[in-house]
Image 1: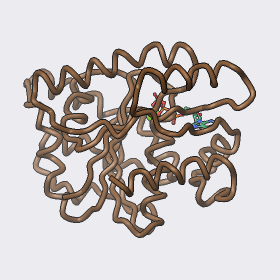
Image 2 (image 1 turned 90 degrees about the vertical axis):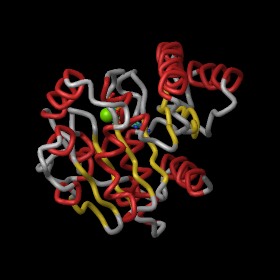
Image 3 (image 1 turned 60 degrees about the horizontal axis):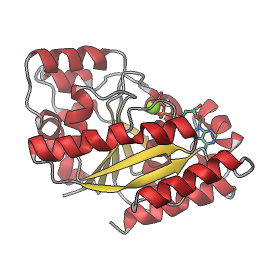
Image 4 (image 1 turned 180 degrees about the horizontal axis):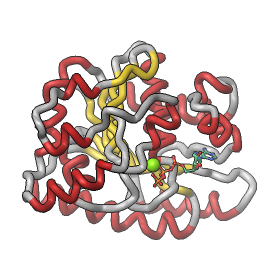
Length: 247
Ligand SMILES: Nc1ncnc2c1ncn2[C@@H]1O[C@H](COP(=O)(O)OP(=O)(O)OP(=O)(O)O)[C@@H](O)[C@H]1O
Ligand SMILES: [Mg+2]
């Protein structure tokens, strides 16, 4: 049974997609078999890894008789992806309208479980039916939080969402941790936010620094492991990969 790690936060732009792609490729480079499932209609995991976004997860979500493995694309050695695209939001509407059970995504990906050591699920910046089903499928949830005041302030909503999932639907996954992202080593705001997170949440992981190189590598569809594996932010992400390998 693989670890299924859903990366979620209803706040936008906190490095969810970047973390999914970087973590997944880091694990793949360590010899683990990894699948990314992109449940965000923005479909940006395919973009940052430089793979086609068709065929996309929509077909699997609406259950029109496709086999899960027919949607899997090879992205790198040991790393596969089921891409998302704009159709994913139609799938969410349909799943909600038909009141599909909270376990619908877990059931949809279940034929793929034996093939992988880790399944990493990217989600969109909102808290809808798809996020609920994506979190419910997870054995572990990882919450990237930008180290700025508003992002830290909104973290409570994501925590309440997870608590609600456990209370209402008996979700028995674990919080891997809060991942402080876009950590600015120069300004005081990041340090203050990190302190606040550490004081409030015992699961706060080591921060990932803000570095222009992360934008550069996204622009050329390379991961940081390919673009500049010796840089500081790669070192930060190596810490995350190691933490996940210890789960
Ligand atoms: N460590 C970093 N340093 C600098 N820029 C970064 C870093 N990590 C991510 N970024 C950039 O920040 C932006 C937002 O990142 P990303 O798309 O991963 O966030 P997201 O949480 O997935 O956003 P959304 O909520 O829209 O899905 C992107 O332009 C990305 O390249
Ligand atoms: Mg994203």
